[in-house]
Length: 434
Image (cartoon, rainbow, N blue to C red; front, side, top):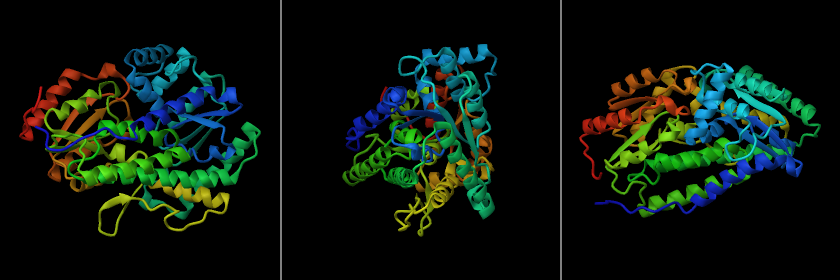
């Protein structure tokens, strides 16, 4: 019997519409006289925004996830990449993206739309090489990459910050030279404001999941956080996240639950096996909700420790009353903001990730943790065995399962479901339904 009322998000269709229009606009950009650029979900998208309102990106990781959801197309992309000569143990998003180019097929119909330039940053071992190869496969696309691997947030000095900001200035010169367009600093400033607003608002949404019952479940959150990975710098995403935040606040006020029979709370880690999201619905048979993860919270969301010692949304420049007046100031704020991104920290030490995960486990009132030993992403899976030990030492039961976010050939569904059954048993939970 259900303990809590539940209902669908009122803003759900708007989120779907934003995502659909994003991929359509990219494909049709040239028909409107606009520009297309390709880069990662972590790239500084606010900077190309200074070229005009008719500049449309495609970010590689969410595009790779879209491919992964379509099992047949995903396998064809993977096989095309392997046939070309690339190793199977490389980033599966990257291999899917390259395969889409090699097949000349766009996941949303038609031929793969060729970008006018590549705009990337580099923290993961694959980032710069991803777009160097993509450029070569597409006949030589002008490419620029910003090196952001300057250390964790607590080690960023003025010199390290200047290193990133100076590259951003060089990047603007590259954009002007490549596109033959005059750069607009006001559009940059607006985009920086929007990015800070969007990524802080997303963190506010995630904070609301501390509530029991949780107003959102992670499977639903996957369809929501992704908007920030597409164009976190865009007003439409910032506005949507604030609307979503207000709606989730209302759900909390009215006691609306994501899982009506919630009696157990867990979190996951890293990207899920996108072709098998049914795993999260299977948890619900036990009354178990995944409230999110460091991945869903911190891939896009920006966080800070609040005066009461809890984790909360990072205070934006707007909230601090900061008025951005110059290009350099805008770039400096953009660099500082992104260098604080939670998911960037643990590229330097697994201990940094463990600390954040233990914080989530405590503040979000978790009963256990599910860790995806994800062969498809070396960057976010780095140190995951150490994370497991740290979580267990902190007193949280941990289940591990092996798989691949983008290559369904490496996921054993039956074995994973059996592991979930066993894990639920260790948490003294039996199925409430079949």
